[in-house]
Length: 99
Image (cartoon, rainbow, N blue to C red):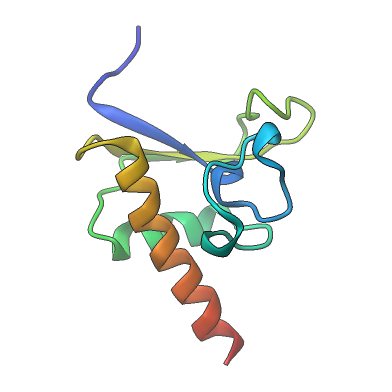
């Protein structure tokens, strides 16, 4: 049964290497190259979101041949807003990591 209280956030939403038709949800400047599940969970926590579950085994429906991974986050407004908050933290962490 579908859980309407949580949002599933896939790694593919933030992968700069993918086209939108393959699962990317954000503009390229708000994405990073090959994000990891650990980075995604940390970015969600820094954005003030509680990560209730994470799994690296599932496959994104647009790329069934690649294990992608996802995290489950309690719904706090629209999904696009949640993705924007996470992507800001993810991009900032990668920029800080480069320096």
